[in-house]
Length: 264
Length: 307
Image (cartoon, rainbow over all chains, first blue to last red; front, side, top):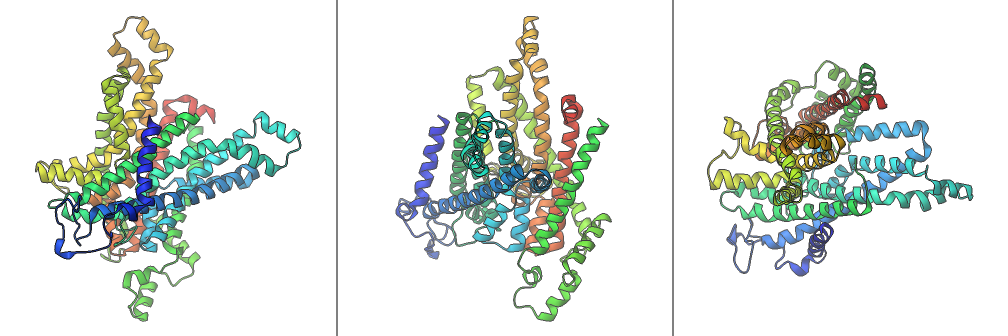
């Protein structure tokens, strides 16, 4: 049920993002200042924004920004985290202690606080946004990978593989990582939801994706000045953002339940 | 207990040092020139040099780091470029508003989520249970920067019941507190429900039932009492998260707290203030987590004896 609902919603937004030019009725950048803030009509079901751009088209293209930021950040964070967690577990000793202290510090920053600070120094933009969100986001993956590897290597099948003469690399890639994959996948799903919301949050604060690019967060920021006369500027992008976050969370929960992963 | 606290402090110190250093590195080492950002690319070279000197940015990085640490030890975070006042004073003036908002959000979340969670668990599988679960899913997914404007549209513009923004009177805190607390309420609701369900399956609850206690007493006294431990812990941990969430909520409602100060400082390129705010919020988060750790160990002896 959860999986079905989540996957269908996710597929819907995925299709919108992938084939945005097909679905969007207009160019999301095309301005018509004479129609500034026009109410919805049959031709423009969500109306027009301040610069006379079609809101529906901008909402559809906005899905691209969310997906691009979400998947890019999670991929980088996952890779860095698995690498660092792997090194800590395999190396052990001082290296382990040192790396885990770094993880502690990275996790000592609440939410998107450090990302806000980094964006303040780097300046807005999509590339900088990715850097800011990757700065501490890998720590959860690192801690999880290390914990998984440490507990998995006590298992009998690993002992059996060692006894059979398998090399370290073979044990890592054939036995340890595949068995650690389920919790990492669940972590990635929940992480994806929070990265998508974090991107929109930074863009909402004016620190993320810059106009005229259509990010749901920056659209919400633009809508703030017109809550009284044009609340639809706020309603539609926010609704999409919430539904996408909900979809990813549902998929994450369904995966967690199916793969029987205990989260901290 | 003393041994446990000592060992936690032993872990706390390197984390504090790491946080302080990470903030320094972010502000000082990231490519990009704060001086140019502050004055604009067209500024005169001499002008840039003067500001760089004033901020101490013309000194070697290690010397800057030393000055920064020494200042921190004295509670000196430098001066604001915009107002020329000490950053410490600027931030201290804003803390009460942030704490007020965070505590209001926390209380609001607790008084709605905990009773609903217990009810949902007591009527497991019923209509109320499904409804609360549905709303907690929505509540966890709804971003504050959408919920806030929606509440303004409905309650400030549509119904004209509550002020749009600012911090003026008791009514002005309602919308910001709801905005900030909604996500936490959703988390607490699900947690309370599952913790009560878990406790309800335990032997002492069955014993209470066998003694003929009414169902209400069984849930309120025995199941909830034992379910509260994880709930209180998560509340504490979430208090720290609320502080960073406050950055966005305060911006939506022009609430004059530390988060709003930070965003204003970013807009004015007032880096000493930005650095001070990040440091303050992060350190507060670390200390709150530390306090929760200790509190948890005090409540549950198994924790402090385990390590």
